[in-house]
Length: 238
Image (tube, rainbow, N blue to C red; front, side, top):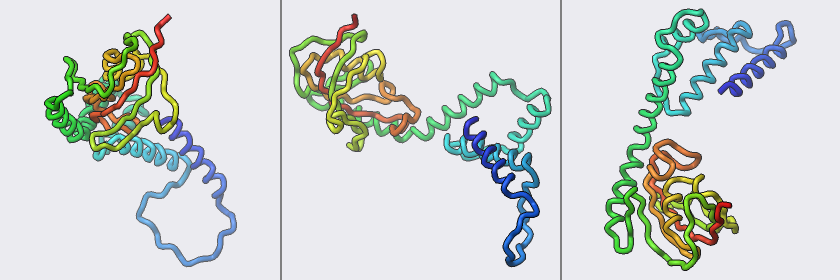
């Protein structure tokens, strides 16, 4: 947010330099007076730019409505060295709780759809559900060694959403991926330890064992994810 604000300030400053009074302007029709606030100087422009930056940031986070009078009061209290109504620690707690609530509301339908699917899916022949809630089925059983949580593995995989739309695929890239089992989502850490080299499993991963309730890159918060995973190699920790 700071970088964005500095960029806006630099832009406003540049505009101010090249818009000095006295420069020749083409003749034109008289312009009606605007009822909008006039940015009379750089301080006005910077003040408005700060508001634009902050508002855009929180709008992108899903905040649709704020009490702008209290926002203004908080700014005046801080800049005027007055005692704020809440301190920094309390403000952080409030914002964390508020953003969590917004995300929960946003992800609710996605979570419910995933849970409904898993309830039906666990009844299918061949689908096994672990104590954590991870579901999997064996497509092909290998005969090689099994990894531990401390190992790294090399595998091919294909990831899809509940609607079948793909979001990641090592086959399309033409190259398997190698990673430490301790550094991936819990569903993968648990699931791959069930596999032997040469195996191919299909994992149905609840959002709690995936990327959680918050949006992660192109993955909406609360998503139940399906992965077809082929274990190619285990690299033991030295």
